[in-house]
Amino acid sequence: DAGLAALGLAADERQRGALIAYLVLLARWNRAYNLTAVRDPLEMVARHLLDSLAVGPYLAGPSVLDLGTGAGLPGIPLAVLYPQREHVLLDSNGKKTRFVRQAVMALGLPNVEVVQARMESYRPGRKFATIVARALATLSELNALGEPLLQRPGRLLLMKGRMPTAEMEALIASGGALGPGNVRVHRLDVPFLTGERHLIEVRLD
Image (cartoon, rainbow, N blue to C red; front, side, top):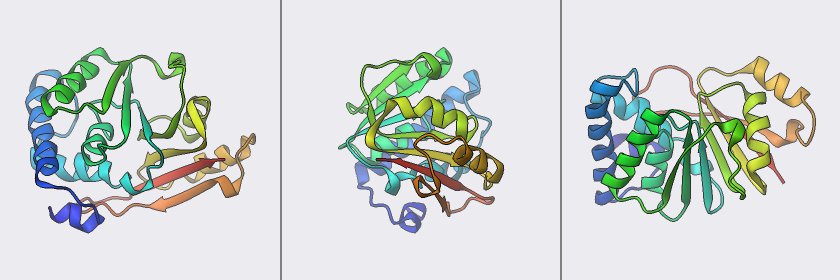
């Protein structure tokens, strides 16, 4: 509750319960399937839940694609908090997508679709208003993968730890539709979490 308040996010009792239920399920499965390096459920609150939800205010439009969702991060927390949006959670790892499907079913999230596929070969025949990726590949690689799947206008939200200065320079230098005006950097203050967090926002019109 303190973390949500610090982020300026509103969640009702059912949503808070679903977020905690997700962590309980993740901790249980993690003992057998090694889904995340974080073992302590209390530590998961900041490092997984609040870190994922910090990107919430930057979502736009009715549809969100989570590239490389892993154990459902940030996709499941965002789907719980933003039920009015459709969320597609994509990952190539069968063990992780099995867990994510189980979590979606257990939490009763009708606004989530889980897809097991490689990002390079994912061709859904549709585009998304927002694409988000958390600590995954370089900015240029993610832009190349995400741009064909992005609506116009659309937002590509790339979550990083430390400020990726060299990646930023390479991203802008790659040209195409990108210029300095299309790329914005936001410093994220995640409650109860030490270390830097940055969000690289690519807006394509």
